[in-house]
Structure formats: structure tokens, C-alpha cells
Length: 193
Image (cartoon, rainbow, N blue to C red; front, top):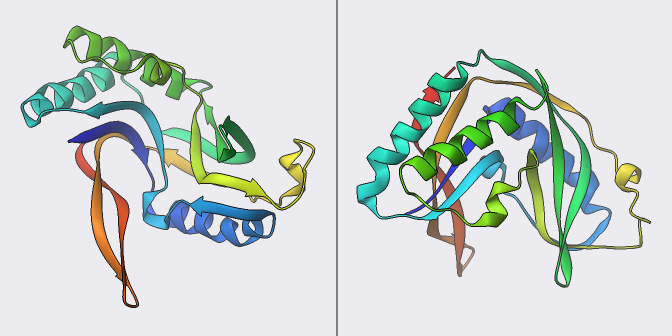
């Protein structure tokens, strides 16, 4: 099982993010855009886990929310950025919350809880910047001079109300006569604030 902790979105937020893709596509030569139903904020990527670890991973979610005791959090998805990767870039939209850095605190507690259950994650995933992945393998049509403000992106307001343990699953889909593999993110366990 390939697992991660996330903030999932309601349909209105997913639709708003999906609507922003038309404008973004005007500026890209190629990209692998996130499917509408896959938009989320990854808090901690756990990776491959045996099914017998699932109960511990649920306890991590319960313990995280119990320790922080958060109430629903106002948030906004606003502003684009990139993470450079060899040969291309990952395009993301930033996330700001009120209170500030609440998602960073949730990330830190999850990492500590996972360590307490002796569930190891890669060091890279302990560095946290709240964001929504818009597209992978991005090549822009022209040099933006690192100024992504040239791309019109409407802010999306939402409320964080829960923490969700998610599974990344590969599914076979058909488009016309062609079969292809797509990634689907499935909620396994949710803890409400």
C-alpha cells in the first residue's frame, strides 16, 4: 500500500482548481496536469507500507488531531511556484492558513508520531511547504523569468476540517481504444477537527 496523510478538498475547491488549468495550459509547452479528483495537500508522504501497519497509521492520525486539538482552519490557495527537477519542473499553488503555519504543525506532529510507531519516512518528506501540485514534468512555452505572476491564477478559499490517510492506487483506464494507467487517491481514514 502506498500511503500519505493529506488535506482533501470538497468538490467546489477541486472545480475551482481545475478551472485554473485552462489559463496555465496557455503558458506550458508540455505538462502532466493533476486530475481534478486528485487535488489535495500532502502533509506527509509515508510511502509503501504493509497492510498490518494500517491500524498504527490510523492511530497516528487520531493522536495528531488529539495533540493539536485544531478547530476548522480558514485557508487560501494562492500564488504559483515551482520545484525544479532534472529536465523539468513541478508546478504548485501555495497554501496560506489562519492561524499561520497550522499545516506545518500538523506535519511535524505526524512525523513525530510516525517515529514513535517506528514507521520510517524519507528525510526529503520532513521538509514541508504547504502546496497543491498543479502539474508535473512542466516545460514552459517561454522563459517566465521566474516570475509566475504572469500566469493568471484566481485564489481559492476553503476551510480545513479534517486530516485524511490516503492511498495512492494505480488503475487501468480506457480512452478511445487506448488503455493507460492513471493514479487515483483514495481516502482510507479521516479524522475531523
